[in-house]
Image (cartoon, rainbow, N blue to C red; front, side, top):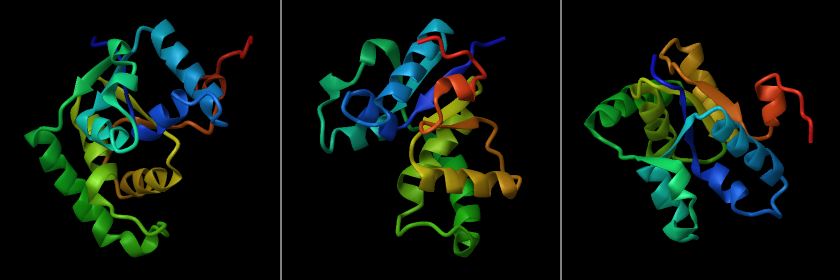
Length: 161
């Protein structure tokens, strides 16, 4: 059995690398949990590009991450997800945002990679798209973890801080 892994989105890193962010404590807790559980933490090249808009790649904790390049199998699954989301966009009540550029690409990566069990994000708009895909029985096979929920609650752990 392959070890579980988690795909961390850009919003995770924006919070984890800013100890003044209200969600820093949750981000730090998830990071420590994944290290303790020896889960592989992945960062997509898509998230690297997003982060580098306002930050530098050297700020990312790359020694603890595996970089996941976006490839053809991811692109194919992105098209499948995006087709469904576009078809049902009027029912999603999304804030004004593009759908294909990042949400469906990252979801496709997490879905295609066999060992990805979780996708961690604080992006509630992204969670709406995930929910729509689940409702449409299109997958995805991974679980969406909302960074607004503390890791102790998400994993049913005692918070012994």
